[in-house]
Image 1 (cartoon, rainbow, N blue to C red):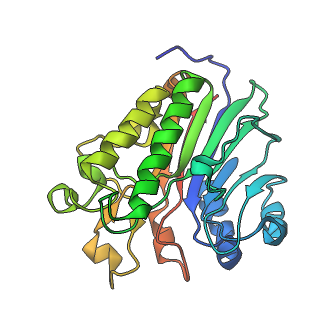
Image 2: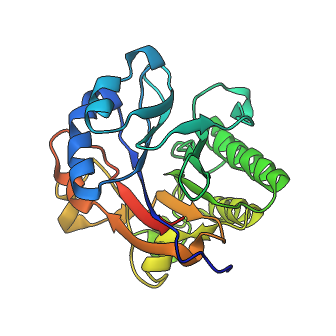
Length: 276
């Protein structure tokens, strides 16, 4: 990993699958109070652009916002305290126009930093692309993103976040043995996300702080009556940084208490602070 300038300033980037930004806009204040992110990336906003709650975001200090949404499904947004420019090579993944990616350049005193916010398809329940179109779409999506990533070359001064809907490592799930045949942790998905990560030479920022042999979750199902007691979680939400930023990683936070908030998402916010 390349050396980082001693004068680099910290940048706090958070990601959260909010599962309806209009329903849960009041919860954003709790995220800001707990994590104080400079850039907040949201997934599953589930609203067309004209109904996005801009006032709530602005009231929390996020004067710069880039959004792409649709009624009832998908949607991603980037909220920032710093000026944003939409990157010119945005893609319509798999030709579906389903609002699953935003790439922006964040204007910072030390130079711009790319931030990519992804919402990967969940893939349904049956891990067989021959019989489950949702799983086939998921694999096609990741393959297409991987090819695009490889074509762009090694990531530089960049951060990639989002609900990637894959828990690749053994301790990213509550039971590797029992989850190996379950969508999100199947071998074909693990191989796919690994190829994607390698295509951009991305560095797993969360596992920088939490060793691979330790459990790490960001999602707990709504189906559990007592999610804390069961603790059958998965790490579906990720933060990757380019290799040149990796030496500047300062801290991370997984806001587990957010899973107990009233009418909350089944995902919790995740933050990484990195010197840029």
